[in-house]
Length: 90
Image 1 (cartoon, rainbow, N blue to C red):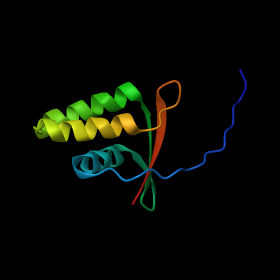
Image 2 (image 1 turned 180 degrees about the horizontal axis):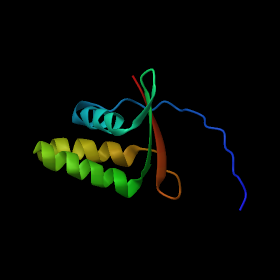
Image 3 (image 1 turned 90 degrees about the vertical axis):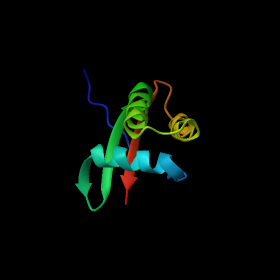
């Protein structure tokens, strides 16, 4: 088994709007922070859908707001394996 090394390039995404922004803030708060307002989150598509469903159920949100959050999750550029690394910077 070899050691794989990769270069990470950041591509800033459009900021989510409305409750999707609030959901993204929750994701960032749950991440390990590296200090200075940066956090990295490592997700599978299914994990983010589960996290969104949990957030929606806890918040008792209306259908149009639920759709806003789920649409944002679906808009994320997951790789072919359904994986994404998000960098949160505030």
